[in-house]
Structure formats: C-alpha cells, structure tokens
Length: 112
Image (cartoon, rainbow, N blue to C red; front, side, top):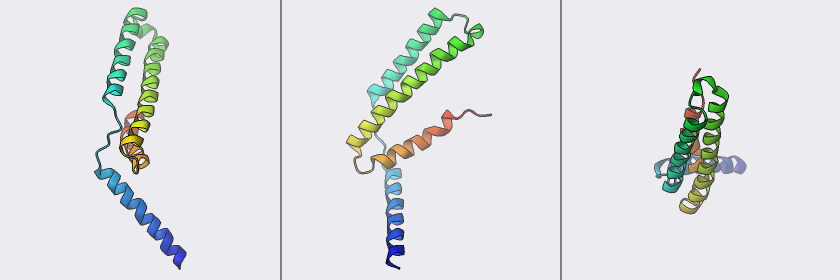
C-alpha cells in the first residue's frame, strides 16, 4: 500500500504544480523577440513586393517566403521562450512552457 500512496502523492504534486503555473503570469516572451519577429514579417513583405509582385501566379515562391519567415520566427521565439522562462520561472519553467505551447497550438493547426 505505501507504493500507492507515493504515486497518489506524486500525482497530487503534479496537479498543484500545474495549478501554480496556470495562476502565474508567463514572462517567457521577450519584447525584443516580438519586435524581431515583426521585423521578419516586414522584411518578408518587402521581399515579396520586390520579387513577387504578382504572388497569385507564383504561389510556390509566396509560400516559400512566408513559410520560411514563420519557421524562423518559431525557432527564435522557442529559443527565447526557453531561456527566458528558465531564468524567470526556474522551478515552474517546464510546466509554464508546456501551457504556453498548448495555448498557441490550436492557432497553428489549419481549420478544414
């Protein structure tokens, strides 16, 4: 029976950590990162305007520009979120990152 109590206690601790992480303001997004991703989007728009003024007839090029920009932004945001969360939320950083990803995941899945 002590083993069941141990597993129950560990489960309770996980629930408490999740509730704490949910109630804490996540500070994993840095303002410099948000500004940089905005600059990536402005740069992508400029590249599109210069190289693909008729994007409707060059769908592959259009998708290449914007998917590359999105991928670069996701990588930059992920690295910054991980390092900043570790620094500011050391004990709860993993749980807070998981919750932040869960919040944004639905926006990355296309609606059919």
